[in-house]
Length: 236
Image (cartoon, rainbow, N blue to C red):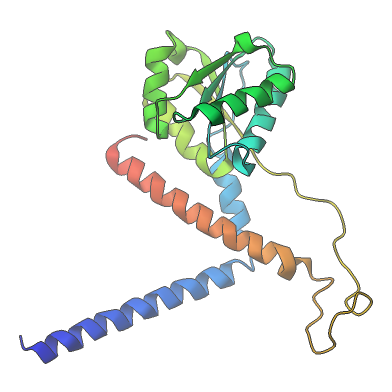
């Protein structure tokens, strides 16, 4: 094959690649105007998480640094559950980071949780490894009632992973955010809005919902990629 033919083939592949990404981007834009991203995200959080038992362990799966939005909201749910189930032990699963782990534990202590209830699993760096480490650290935990606390998008995969590792009784408490009930509309002209600018003061869907759903789309796409990866490895 001559050099010119190779160049033409490369440009042809690039053209189709750009076209494909453009189509995907347009599809995601259109999808963000529907409630599908919200429903998919809720499905990931609730499909496998139902439980009808009193947990012996409340398992926190860490998400990032501390303080951070993802960890703080999960700790909020852990605190509420610890009050509801005062006999349950709490396991903080987070990769080794002394400062982060200390801050997470401190957050629980501030809310009156006894330190004797709190245990640390700091060696697992993904959900599969965390499940395996807990099995080796806590004798008989596979037969106990385990309640997983993590972000909604991670819940489906997390519960499936623990069940695959032999945990018999696993449920989940997805750390959903609560939406604001405040009217955020404003008067465009009164606060000095330019007349040549579109007035979106009363359009909550365009100002907030659309952008939130775009973020949910990326979150869900990332999670479904992880689910496929875990499935191909036989971890779920």
